[in-house]
Image (cartoon, helix red, strand yellow):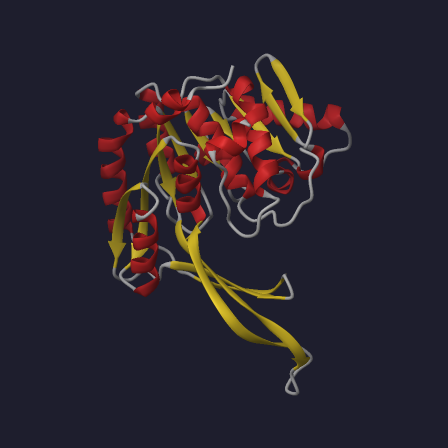
Length: 309
């Protein structure tokens, strides 16, 4: 049963995570540099979009639900640009400013419709800014139907364990897009959504579905999760919960760009859970949303019409 527009419009998702700005420099490649064997890109177009956890919140709003976003940014030009972009999306932003922080920027250089280079500008926020983020979280969490932690490993979720405990104590479903090799910090969440490579970092590689099932269920029980969702690219998605497992096949379509597909999947799940769906019912729709977004360039989003047509 698909949720109505009214149900989604009433759904509220609180997104917490690493704020970042995505920059794209597009250009023509007509020659190789005489200085080194690299292409020379004559930049003709510059695009700036919301990246990181902010893009997750943006995905929630494009589906027609409400999103609030808690993050930390620097007092710099990329931070001001990011805040302006987010204001235009309808996301309710609660951005703490850290004067010592360089707002994370991912700069991608594109030539001939291919990404030639990515440059990252980043450092980690201080504890004062993160403490104020935790206070903001305590105020906002009770007003939302689902809590989503989007971890990009940039230091913005240093206190995620405390926030998960508080959210679960308040009876809120907690969804986590994890990062790194230590998942113990996500203990007690409702669901985590690693991709295949991320899960292998934590549980090691597997040979066959039986071994994957055993490792996924073992991790789920260790972390006291309700469910674990593994996104597996061309192999679709597998959801492991106390009832067993559900597998959905990848949507057959031309893959143009996988950037941000994981953001779309977890944002769709969170919006649907906040609208009252259970995880198993929300799964095929989240899978469809991921299939739509890989057919677009860059960190893209999915609309209500695209998802439910």
